[in-house]
Image (cartoon, rainbow, N blue to C red; front, side, top):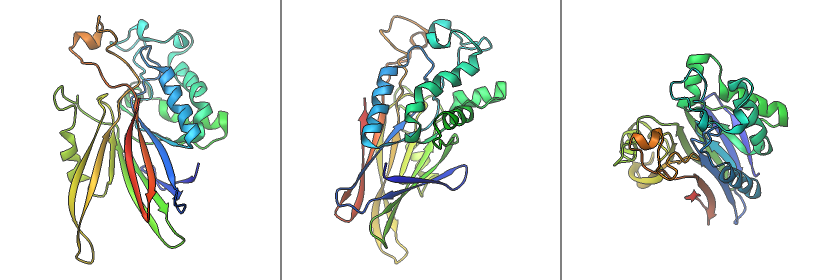
Length: 285
């Protein structure tokens, strides 16, 4: 990997990247809602994307709900058929961390951060244990790599070294998400709301609703020297690795009228075009 992580605070992570080569290219996997312990989660697809991260030297920014954590005996939604075989014995919350540690440890050094979603914060509220913090600590203990726990929201600042005297900064705001997404808008309406109170973000990454899209918002800006220029703020919604719909036969998701959802994540690719650092978002499916 050609970058260096520098935590600034609990909400801000600097990623320093050497982009001096004319052939510079750096990938990051943007993921959300892995729901890793759910029986409907596609572990094979997860592993394929994680192996691609290793091959590409890509970092991973995960924005929450890595755990499903809904099958404990205290949860009214609990359904043992939705629990993978690996979790059918032992202390439930402990097993969540143990199995995830075993699965993700070969990829520990790829993680820029692992954020928290509403499934993790629900466990904190009800059981006073932080699954995200426990996972990152366990990964560090097992692998010796530094793995950072992010918040429900936070920032990643990409700082590109273009020459010995020139740097480019791209700010990524991550937020796990809120609301139900909406059967028609799929949460896209939130882009206009978020763009108002996130003027410094070039990229806004979220999840939660299991939808997947990208929406660029063009902006007129005014530079310090009085020059008018245009830029874009790109909103990126990550999908999920959990296929709740299946064949549509039945289950809670079907009974409530839930639709099929996109399975997978998003690739964020930075590259050099002359003296400019550009980015593109590509669906990882």
